[in-house]
Image 1: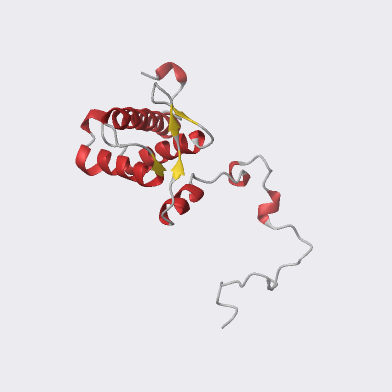
Image 2: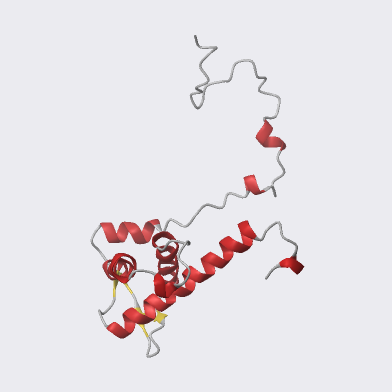
Length: 155
């Protein structure tokens, strides 16, 4: 029965395989895409601070750009929300529904960071979110749609 079961408990030796022989994963070159180790953005520290009820401090200068020690986390978080919450199947940002997508993005940002609820700042932040979303759509198209097409054929 144990011979038919393919479940392996970590830390137990594998029967039928010599410990001196390298495994198949050891034969893969270190620069191979499977060995790079890059994972998706999770923003765990930002998410944990939001779920614990505390908010991160962020300041804006007169042109409504984020400044201070949390500006890079803020920028990354806005991009993360754009990638996760807005469908790539929508043609343009103007067609993204305000009540079901844009407003919840703004509400999530306000729950995570201590920022004033001004219309001007909201418009600027959602515009920044739109920029991240367009960059993400371009990356997806170039990586997966146009990857096999020679450069001279791109539209």
